[in-house]
Picture (cartoon, rainbow, N blue to C red):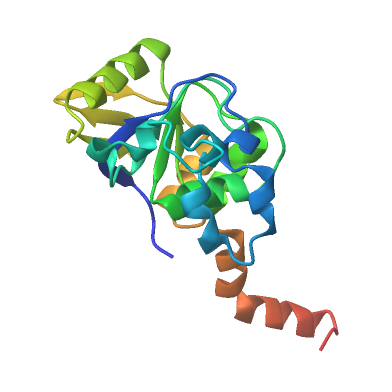
Length: 196
């Protein structure tokens, strides 16, 4: 696992406060066999009609294809604690989320997947959303070292939990990877405790 100090790419703005995990990934998709199947179902009911016709959602706009930074509003990821929501975001190809605030469990699930969730002021998010709308090819750089987003030669401050920031910068955000990396230490401790 490698550290994450910067995420860069085109942005896409999905407007709305209190976007819950059921909107991010509808419950009927929780039956999937692998998380890989979740990408196409991201925001499915927001993107498609019952007959599969497009609702012209920003994620489906040609100009936003390949976007890697999702921009949204307050209380993003609220609702049920389903891990499928950040998995769907990741499998769709998005690598970072900028919002006004995040639901706690969603935030933690994103962190363990290596998806930085950063908080930005409303006015700054509005400026970035307008820039992305006017010039969709604009690259955003989410910099976790300097705690800022660079967009169209403008710099915007961001915040995130310091524990998450340190985990990204030190490549310790995935607890399973940490456990596997400590296999020898675990074996030695088990021997000392008489568990072998």
